[in-house]
Image (cartoon, rainbow, N blue to C red):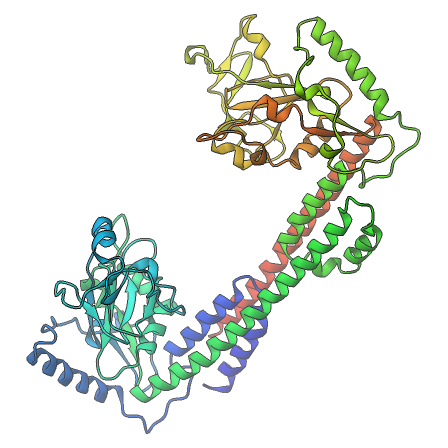
Length: 570
């Protein structure tokens, strides 16, 4: 390896530490240099590869004569158009099938595998799932073995190179055998001639140029490579002595990559743990957490803590939690307390019940006072814990006759799938479902200024919540909460973002949320002016989070560009 290449490689170890996927790119660079003959120096005293190939041909003839292999079919000559790049003197491009005996394994159906071969004694049976991505050992302890007297199974011997040839893992999963095995029909085994080190061919499989050749040979809907195509893939072959030097050097450099990866993972884990501890102190509900010290620590180490998006995501959650705990903005003693707001809400609720607009809550469990055990955390002076049903109307959607749906109409008919939109507000992007209601149907109309969310099925786990900008109808799988009076909808939305809907699931086979799950929830009610201040502050801080994420994206983009630029010099 010349001094320029050595310098580039050393430079990569520093650059790869910061760039996203940098260590993976560094591994690819090492393999690329190796397969180009730039990783270790060439030695004029090495026996040329032409001598190795003559010995391989003699070995194949002997194995054919002994009946150990079938006579291989002639492979096309390598032309200049087949060679991806020029090789050093003493190297040669060869077809993969010319340097190894390549064959696939045998399939076993699931029933036979379980009844006949699970727990049997014999050779381990290796399927695709038991193969890693090159650097991992095979999983020999999967419990499936083939008795040695079953002749129908092909055996790959110790030091064979395996590669997946079909499906999503084709060309990606590969590994070495450290014992004799039987294996699946979606895997190819390569038993090498001429004492070629198996690890050299494994590293060739992992190199970008080989993977590109493999991908070019793939066909079919599922995606795979036939043996006929696989054996024709060209590989660079150095003299045997240099192969061993290359393997030793790659092993050494990959160990450095492993150490680098472990160091970076440890650093990231430490950064996440420190950040989590600081946020935990901020959110300490006992009042003994020293939140001022936590804020000071975050401020002091802001640049380092928020260099990763995971911490920014946690910061967003903490902002919401602080907001609904009354710790985000200062209280104003001039604000009318929440108890006064509750009086107005109660008066409005009585009017709505009397008008028949909503139903009363007399006798219902969710109308009872909150007990101390139900209160999540203390609230500031002027705030009050109430049940959700005290300040909101909860309602569920309906399933409407499909004949009522129109391309245009008075009100949009929204289903759970329509909530799969970006942003906080629900924006109707479809014009295919509208309804003109009659008087009876109008009672099911969800008012503007409500929040809708899934109440049934797998969509609950997505935690989608959307503010309704205009009156709409919703389907039976959707629930809505509507403030009665004095609750700022944006504040209610921020609170609902802190609630994991999946934890409210009372369904059995089908996940489901019902009114009895939503109505009794404790809701932290601040004075109305403070609700507006909280919403404004959250908007400001979420904007800061957006800026942080944009800076991280920009910084990682620069790091990636730098790494790619250095790699382009190779």
